[in-house]
Image 1 (cartoon, one colour):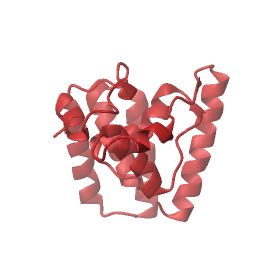
Image 2 (cartoon, rainbow, N blue to C red):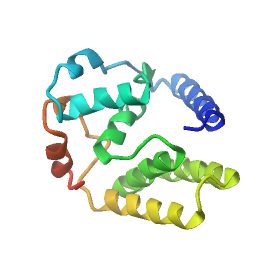
Image 3 (cartoon, rainbow, N blue to C red):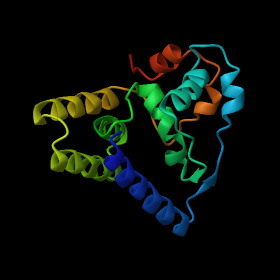
Image 4 (tube, rainbow, N blue to C red):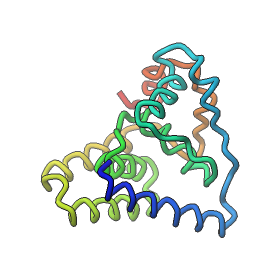
Length: 165
C-alpha cells in the first residue's frame, strides 16, 4: 500500500479501534501465529501465517471479531491488501449479507481511490461487481464463521466449502 494511503488507513483503523472500544465490542487477540507456522504448506492456517509474513504485517491485537478476522478474509478470498483489494473485501462481504456497514466502508475506500485517481474507473467497478457477485454466490457467513476450526484444512477445501472457487 502506498505510504500516504497507508497512513490514512492506519488513522482509520485507529478511529475504528477507539469506536469499538467505546462501544464495548472489542475482544482480546485470539490469533497465535506460532502454531500456524507449524501447519503444512497449503493449509488455511499456514497460508494465513505466510500472508502476514509476506506482507510484513501483524494480526490485530484487539478489536471486534470482524476486525480480528479481516486478514483471514484476504487469504480466504484471495484479495490482496492494496486499497482496491480492501474495497473488494467489503464488496464481497456486502454480497454475503447486505449489511450497510460493508457498503459504507467500501464506498469510503472507493472515494479515497477516486480522489487520488489510483486506478482507471472502469476496472474498479468491474472488480467490485465481481467481488460482490462472489459474495452473493457463496455460502459464506462472517457472523457464524470460525476460521480457527479450519486452520488445519487445505485452503482450497475451505474455499470449496463456501463456494469461493
